Length: 265
Image 1 (cartoon, rainbow, N blue to C red):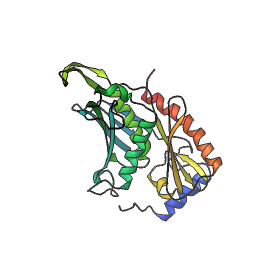
Image 2 (cartoon, helix red, strand yellow):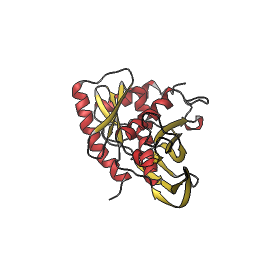
Image 3 (tube, rainbow, N blue to C red):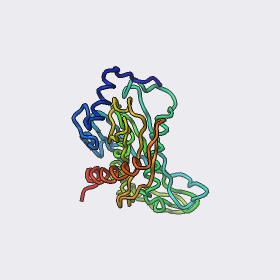
Image 4 (cartoon, rainbow, N blue to C red):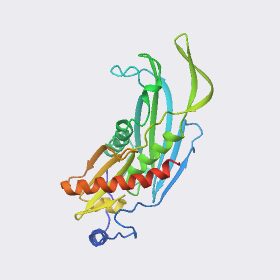
């Protein structure tokens, strides 16, 4: 994968501004860019959502199919998350099999949903040990301007909340589709919050230029009761214990703000 090279003078400006407690786009260090959400925009999917986080844009579609359960959890539905970084979204993305960035993106989103037990998978078992419902979450990055993880996690949660399951009955060992729909059983609302460390400062929602100069990053996924259910560190730098504690406090505060945009009432 090629890397976007930003001018050296711009890199210095980003680092200097953050050292002074500012950002080049005018945000404070713990401010998100504007979040825009649209749900139910793909007619052929069981659920869908598009999230714009500043100029970063992510589309998520949900499909539900009937399949076999995993042998070690034969009475639960199956969750599968995939991410696709298409070249039209960024000159750094290439065609071909998923690269490590796409794999990491899918795994972080998957982990947050799975570890928070956001989907009641035990309710997605149609015939124990034989047939369950498989939830496919497909992430498509439409424009990359930084912080794909948070944008994708938000879009995935919004799409799940938008998902409708077809009604069904089991007859003679087979699943028959019935008229009507029910909501996908969702019981938690995990929110991923990513912080970048730049010149010893913690910065929320790094845009693309900030990602190019960051020392390292940390993503924490927060459940609706404030618990941290998943963490992912990226980059070669490090966080001190004090910085991790500070990051956790910021992530918990920001997750409350973001969840209000996703879950009404």
